[in-house]
Amino acid sequence: MDITVKPNLDGASGDLLILPVFEDRAWGPGADVVATGLGDWLEDYLDGLDFTGKVGQAAAVPGANGFGQILFIGLGDEADADVLRKAAGIAGRAAMRYESVTTTLSEIEIDGAVDAVAYGFLLGQYRFGKYLSEPKLSQTAELVLIGSDENGEVAHAEAVAAGVAMARDLINEPAGGKKPEVLADIAVSMAGDLGIDITVYDRDEIEAQGFGGLLAVSLGATNPPRMVVMNYRPEGAEKTLALVGKGIVFDSGGLSIKPASGMETMKTDMSGAACVFGAIRAIATLGLKVNVMAITPLTENMTGGAAQRPGDIYKARNGKTVEVLNTDAEGRLVLGDGLALAAEDKPDLMIDIATLTGACMVALGKGIAGLFGSDDDSADQVEAAARRAGEKVWRMPVDKDLRSKLDSPIADLKNIGDRYGGAITAALFLQEFTDGLPWAHLDIAGPARADDDDGYIAKGGTGFSVATLVAVAEDMATG
Ligand code: BES
Ligand code: ZN
Ligand code: ZN
Image 1 (cartoon, rainbow, N blue to C red):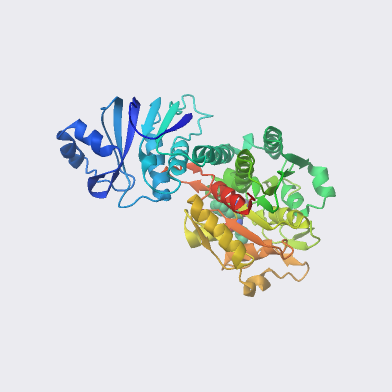
Image 2: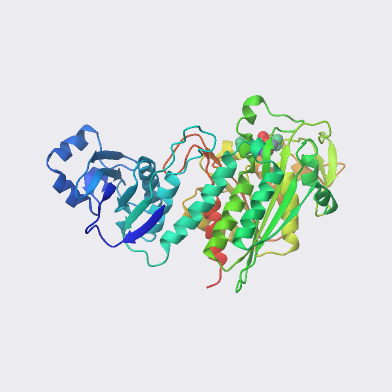
């Protein structure tokens, strides 16, 4: 899709014009002129549709002013960037079959309006059509945004949206089509395109490197694991951000097996890794001046005859021994090795991203990620980035009082606590591998996957956290 920015509607024409409307049908930029041109019937018609301008409302009317069709989009009382992204997502979905689209949503006077509208529109049109005989993909070839783009907002939106779309594609792919080696190959080709360093460790190297948690989880799988480490090192960068993404391409639970219903969505248990891929892609595309180390342990969690047994003990990359009492608490095992590896380079900040616990979803619902941090600065930094990115996170405590729940009589720690505070004990487990460095953990078990279309989110993998991670990188970049 070709996205251009124009200062006003003069001489514009095309298949579809999308216009903003505030609550109580207060016309947004461009809408008043068109509404007047359409005639007196319009108000009655919109009354009949009960279209008042609430956030998310949409009303299509016949064309005018050089456009084949007009679409009014509700923005509610006041539009901020979140509302614009959402409205643009709805507009994008409604505009799928129109080739040339123009909108004045981007003329709303807030910072980043062009970015928000381009981002929402692009992702609103996202579809995973790969396995459909007749996929209904976007026909939109040209999007004209009315407004002004002084700071490369379109390029920014395109880079981040492409990272999110990549993550969504990987998450939506069935597990059989994304074996660890396949994902590693995708990372290699992406790294090649972007000029990023990459190292892929195979099963034997994983063992030799002491990635004991990743190896332990992989034992029950026929498809071998991979550890993928990418390094983006632009000239002029001063700080280093390490990203560690949980890459369980399918979580059966292992011998602590999940019920059938619990497995239905477990192809999405590599969302953390997918988002790390998407984020480093966006960061490198934008040329942000910050070093990024992206670590993604990739494996299936299966029940083969060689699978780890509840009660088995492994030694992690940092030398700590772990008694595995529940093989379904596997994410923390692979992340522990990833975090330990990251910590060896002493980055300024480490962030791990994982569909880690059902408990976090119980606590915060499906739309909000749990944010844990080693200290206020690290957590605040991620929280502020998430707010800018329009992703909902909520700070959770890394409460030391619960650490004793992970005590094991025969190993340095065990991999589960008791019934209560499951998202917190998981975070406390991860912290054991961070070597006391600044660290944040995003438990995205809820928001990684959507049950329905909503704004610029499409049912299925969401790519939640890509935009936040890019925003953190922007914050840490020089220049
Ligand atoms: N991948 C799951 C967590 C999950 C559950 C993500 C549902 C998204 C939706 C994780 O590996 C897991 O199974 N965690 C267990 C931990 C427990 C055994 C301590 C859980 O949350 O039940
Ligand atoms: Zn699990
Ligand atoms: Zn899992």
